[in-house]
Length: 133
Image (cartoon, rainbow, N blue to C red; front, side, top):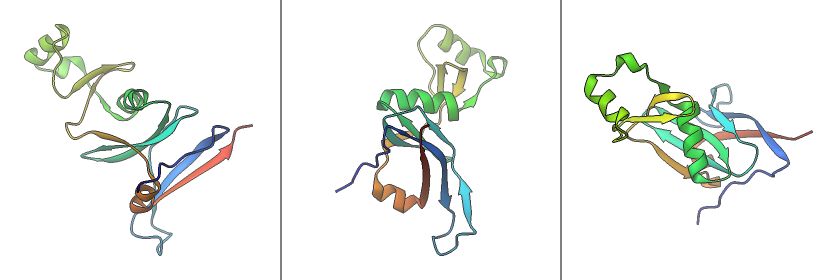
């Protein structure tokens, strides 16, 4: 059974790191991008390029945050005419999302799941929190 990892509502995320080899090699630690929306559940946002961590009230909010904070921005002039026409007509264009920060590229392999204690162990995550003052 997977146990959902929770942070107390009176705490905030300070940092997220991961062991790049194994816990036995603490000198091999890398930062993980994260976004803390103040309260809610933790989610892991996976793409072809890796993963990020987000804390949000709902899955939908977490996905919007991930696309706004972690996806690569797109220059309108770099799009071909067909993609621009599809976006302008609101038909949508696979691979692109228009969010709060403008147009971004969204990886076809994106996945967003609640973060479980088992997944934290598997990914070798170290989540540092502190009480909000």
